[in-house]
Length: 103
Image 1 (tube, rainbow, N blue to C red):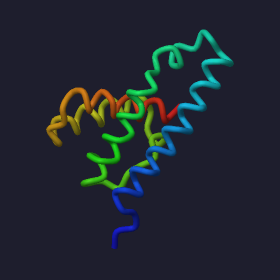
Image 2 (spheres, one colour):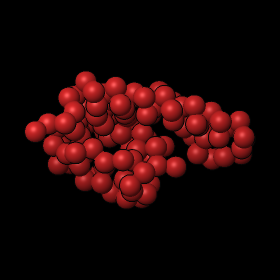
Image 3 (cartoon, one colour):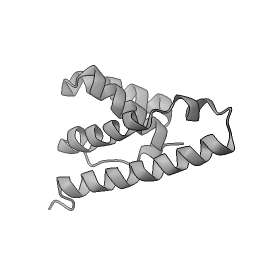
Image 4 (cartoon, helix red, strand yellow):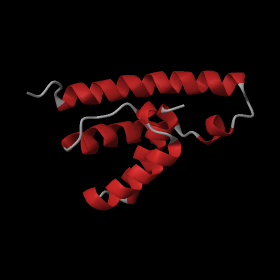
């Protein structure tokens, strides 16, 4: 039994990204020297959320991005790039989304 449809997952990802953008703006305003906030590209995170929901949901139950560390997501995304034959640009976007989401 499928609990969520792909459009619902896309909407969930979009809402998560919107929350992240608001949170990253708050972090950037509160801590101007924050390295993560300075490196975050909001559009890359949005593209990553979309690519994550479209590609990863095909075979996996989507996990919360906060379940793994940046390093663990890096290993997982690199592994899945090869297994799923994902383009490098999608892989970079997905990695950026997952790493921005687990802070």
